[in-house]
Structure formats: structure tokens, C-alpha cells
Length: 194
Length: 194
DNA sequence: CAGGAAATGTCAGGATCTGCCATTAGCTGG
DNA sequence: CCAGCTAATGGCAGATCCTGACATTTCCTG
Image 1 (tube, rainbow over the protein chains, first blue to last red):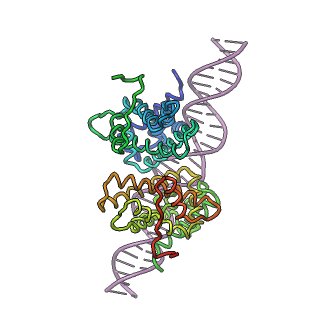
Image 2: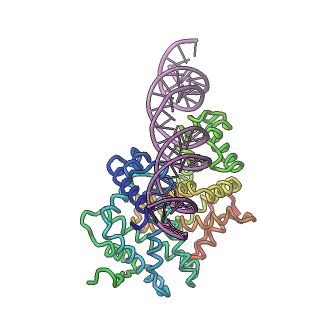
């Protein structure tokens, strides 16, 4: 048993996603989520600052994954970011069903869309900070990160809404191609090698 | 008397800004705002969907202003957007003090920052829609609008935080210049003509 | 001035979120 | 195996947010 706290967190996240999908976000109360996870409402709010946050709990992990996937040194910068996106795509791929559920909820609820935007901004800031720490010019880092994340969001949106499960990394390629600056992803050698 | 409803709205906005600034956003209750405006809490929520919205009530007007300021036809597109930003700047200039207060509040409160991001997105969508309606390619419109608004935000942030009241339109010029694609604003002939 | 529509007031109530203290689970040293 | 410590949770009260339903007032119009 790794961690009681962590297991509780995950049970709450799972319960929330199920109830949100089944009954709708607004209709699902924090009490109901806690009940399904077998804990008290108070515990729910100890794990998640508010009701929305239960859908965004993975954010920190994914930012860390992006940062870890940045090559040293980050040059050329655009390719470095593209590689990090590949790592992110690889992590997300086996969780497509759940991510699609989550994305549908976010699209349907303004308060969730707000939170998503805020998270996106914090991702961009975190990434840009890491790059500047590694010697990249501040403005360059901010601009390149913005572009990379914008393209990822485009690809991600298509990925979770399309019927056929097209490879996410390929969709990112397509998004880059649409900008006139094609950059192919370089999958990390750890995962699928073909 | 133009409109009872409108006067009530403005009184609520004014009261909210004062109380938020004096006591803090979190500490100010909807009841307190309504009381200071001389209406009931219920009326507050009839005018503004939630407590945050009282700070964003002008948004629709400003989008309309942007749209109206777009030249016909919008060519060259980048200059058209730049001109619209000038019109926006002209509208904001006499209200700098209030806008600075508001900006400080938004910076300090995450829930307000969230709403600001959402509004920014809706602005971009609205502008892009107008442009595509006028024949601009969809992707081009979206990209150019994003860039223009991003530069405006940069300039606006500097405007409301700087001690000296540098001209907003000039700050927009500087932001454009920093991108390597300088575009000067063209003030509408209605206002200051120098 | 009567009538109607729009705006507001009043009230009840559910939901969100927080503070406070009691209780329990899980680990650690003896 | 147990005493004791800490982290996590439970339980509860309460403030605030927000909504629905219905009554009342204000304003415009004929």
C-alpha cells in the first residue's frame, strides 16, 4: 500500500468523473462524490481546494513530465518543446477514454473551462521559467512555449473528439504542419519503438 | 434618466469596486455590495450572474467597440486589428485609474484571473468570427487575433502598473515593435487630432 | 388615471467552502 | 506486543454564494 492519502485522492477523482459524467457536473454535489469514495465531504475539500479541482489534480504531474522531457540543452528550442510534447502525448495515450470524458465535461461547463485556462497559463509560465533558467531568452521562451502549447491544445482537442483514435503524436505533427513550420515528434526510446 | 436598470448596474459596479479595493475581494460579500448600492442582494444577482461578473460587466461593450473599429474591408489584416486596438485604447485612456484598480484586483485573486482569461478567450472568438464573416480565412483570423490581443494584454499590463501614465497606444506600439513587426496605431479622427 | 410590463423586494433553501475539535489509522521505538 | 506520536479523517456549525418562487413597486403608455 503506497500511500493512504494517495489512494483516497484517486478514489475521489474516479468517483467524481463517474458521477459528473452520469449525472452532470452541476447536479453532482461534493457530498455525493465523497460518499461514493467512502469518505466524508470534509475530506474531499482537504484533497481538493474546490469542487472543480478534482478534475485537475493531475496537472502538476504532467507539468513535471513536460519539464523532465525537455532535452539538455534545449536546442534547437522549437524541437526541444516538440519532443516534450511527444512525451506528454505518450503519457496520455493509454488514458484516452478518461481524458475524453474529462474534456467533454470541461467543454460543457464554463466554470471548468475557466479553470482549464488558468491551468494552461500556469503550465506556460512553469515551462517558460525552466527554459529561462537554462539560458533561453525570456521573451523567446514565453513566445515559443505559448505556440507549442497552443498547438498541443489544438491537437488534443481533435484527439479527444474524433471517433477514430488517431495517434495523438500524429495530430500534433499535423498541427505543426498547419503552421508552416513542420516539426516531427521524436518518441522517447522507452515506449513504443516502431 | 436614461435607464433605471442601467443606473442600478453602474451603482453596483461602482460599489463593488470600492468595497473590493477597501476591504478585499474575499472579504466583501454580495450583501454588502448590494447594500451600498441601495438594492437587495437578489437584485445584485439579477444584474450579474455571479460575484465576479460585477467586475467584467463592460466586456461586451468593449468587444463591440473593437468590432466597430475594424476597418472595412479588414485589409491589411494586421493593420486593421492594430487600428481596432487604438480605438480600444482611446476608450480606456480616460478611465485609467479605475481600470488600474480593477487590474490589481484581478491580479491578486485567482478566481478573478480565471474569469479574465475566459473573457479574453471569448473576445478572441468574437473577433475572429467577425473577421471570418468578412471573408478572412479562419485559421488566419484566429492566429492574427490571438497575436493582437496578446500584444494588447502586454501593453495594458504595463499601462496599469506603471507610475507614469505613458500613453496606452504608445505602449501597444512598443509591444508590436518587440515582435519585430512594428505597426503604428492610427487614432480614429473623432478623438484627439494632433 | 387604469393597466401592463419591467424591475425590484422578500423569503426559503440547497450547495459550496472553512474553522475547529474529536477521533481514527498507521507507523515507530521500546 | 504495546505505548505513543503523527498524519489523516470524521463530525459539526456556520458564513457565504446562488437560485427559485412569488409579492410588490416603479415606470411607461393609452
